[in-house]
Amino acid sequence: MKMSRIPDWSKKKIFRDVLLENFVIQKSLQYQLSRNVSIHLLSLILLGLVFKVLTIKDFVITGNKITTIHGFHFQTGRIFITKNIFRTTFKNRNHLSLSSESPQLMSSYWNIYLQDLKSSFFHKS
Image 1: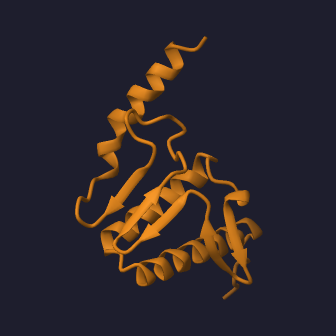
Image 2 (image 1 turned 135 degrees about the vertical axis):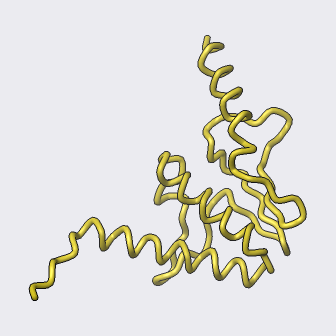
């Protein structure tokens, strides 16, 4: 049986995913984040990477570990995200807050995103 070779791009993606998952696990343990908040955090980081809002400049990497992501601030049981993942401004907010006390689905931000996108698209000077 012949083993197929894993493409280079796949190796890079696997390495990136392991780094991100380790970062989320480490922060979850350090700041006592619930499982749902941790999953939400990983989802937002991945969305930021997919939409190119988060770049390599936003990550502080020491050795083989991500130590900090600019715009993500932690407190016990909470995450404050000041980096604008959706690339729009949230009305009446300067940050997005995640906690196990008030979990929200990603879909709950969809209408806010669409309204802000619509207003920024149609109200350009």
